Image (cartoon, rainbow, N blue to C red; front, side, top):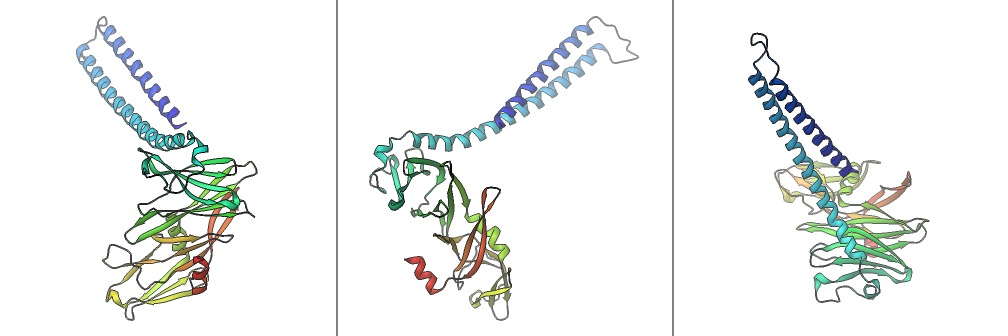
Length: 328
């Protein structure tokens, strides 16, 4: 639709240019036969020169606008085509050859399709696409005989495998992707795939960028510079969550909290976001995490206008019991 609109703009601009050319030609032609009094209006030559100058200026503006629209179309097409091409290549694969594969069984990384995970008891498998042009992007999920394709990035350089869980009661496939990693950074992205009565798989995403939008509202803090104590509390009920001693930052001030750089999910009939808040120290460029324990926020999946909306339930510290359950 957007390309059609842009093409329409180009067509209209071309019509304007043609019309303007016709008007200029008519004026020049008529100027050869019409006599003008030099005391009342401009001379014939001056009028023609002015019109020609206006025409050239208008043509330059139209040319710039056409180039701008063409550039926008080119950028949009390039972005759309890359994902479409990956999925087109994926869909053309002989799945009878792909299904038996296991993770990284082929020594040639760039000419393989990897099995990223499976739930044999539910007949569910997840595959990642790779070739010489595209890698770490493109996912296919099989549920029984049905195949679903998604334009997802599924790996970071650390190659941490996705996790999966099938919630049979709600007909939801939960998947975590860890492709946000780096120095002091490791955060997962949650996908909840809702299976409809029409056997369609609708994707709902809770990305690491969404952590901040929810947690920054729910979690507040106070910092006592004299005692170096930072206190975290739940804004929903003003409940204190934890205190920590930040004597190591000496006389610096804590300016704000940061969420979303460190976090992962515990999947199951109840989903938990396990995260560590970061804090920005006065004059320092990167968030700090020393002395801060992990916290767990229960994810709430609510239906609004036939769409899944993510929210946060109770927030607590991750205790020994929770850690044991999560590591089983």
